[in-house]
Length: 82
Image (cartoon, rainbow, N blue to C red; front, side, top):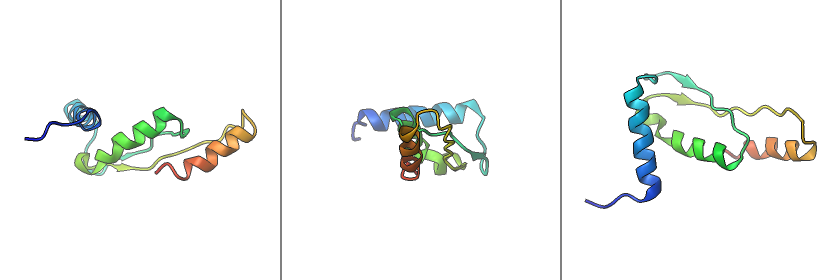
């Protein structure tokens, strides 16, 4: 059996934790908020296991316009964070 790399191992552990928590059920809709920062992108990558969990995931971004042009750039970037 091939040894899992760090990312694969993290995904496997994350999926196992979500399954064991019993929070997610097939057909459940989840909407993680994303800023397109590193943590948001990591969360979306982890949610690639949504088919395994049976959930429907849709990323959501809200532009508070607190940082001017930087906020606008984040909003545009969020369209690519799917």
